Image (cartoon, rainbow, N blue to C red):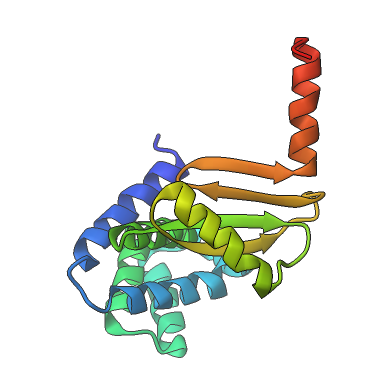
Length: 183
């Protein structure tokens, strides 16, 4: 059985291939992200999308109704109802995230994720983005999140690599070094 990540990658690639020559691809992506944001945290919709107790037609109807109420374009609605038809409505969030990455990479932009304990002020964001532009050799688009587990500093995931500049990361590294007897 395919893992959820592989499924999301496969569908994101298919959607990307259908959109890559479309000048409105980024606006369609925005609509898909909006839909995922609205439906992703909704417990009842998660049950409907994942349950075999609801028919494909019912799932398509739910997706179409939500898309219409949100005012989504026919292209975005077609993609979403297609995913519902294929039984992938519950994976829309993961598919959209991977699609976002593909579209950015197609534009020569590296997406990065930055975690800090507290919200990073705008004045501190540009130096982080400048640093990773140099490290990765291409323009970056950062997504910032907070995580109280980040004791201090920041943690960045870029290009499949993790750059851990947190106090907890440093302590973990020191602990491993001490256990291995390298000090």
